Image 1 (cartoon, rainbow, N blue to C red):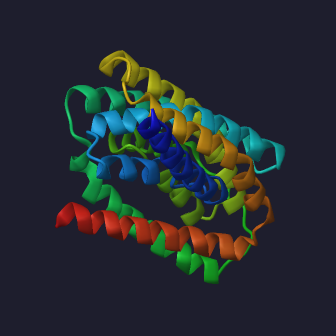
Image 2 (cartoon, rainbow, N blue to C red):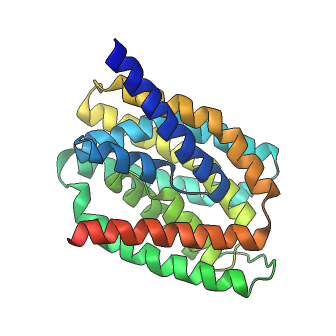
Length: 253
């Protein structure tokens, strides 16, 4: 019982810190949590399933918090969520039955390093511009983000938020919209994992990640509202470069 409580508190702390970063910068909850679970020897499919189950609740609270603070573009949410659901369900099925998530890691990490560099450059040349995106860009982005998110145990925020901001979309609206769309994607991915893997035994991990994330979600959304735009973009860029370079090095060596 003591070990269970200690594990619960540890996972709650991980969930809190990961969601605080995710809520403020639009990325890193599932990536951070999944990395932690993998480092403890949990198989990729079970780690991804655990993180997505916890993420259902954290992404709901985070998305609603962003909505309250005015960080959401509802049309963008719809355009991201529908293809994201399709891609996420497909990725979860393949991970549970066919692939291992490690196969995609180097390619995704290399892409994210490039996106992070673009964001950092844009933070120094920044103007508060609002671009109206064509469907042919947003719909494939949602599909790819959902697919890689479920296969890699995280990545929806880094891929979708990074891509939107790097192509000129307003950082605050990108972060809020991506967080809200993430809830719908995560629900479908979680149920796909449950249908293919069955009920998870590591419920303490899931509960800890969930509670920590739920507690941090409103704080993260408030930080998004308060942080200066230029510094928020710079932080997003540096964060994604750091995480992706580390992941790429570990995957290669």
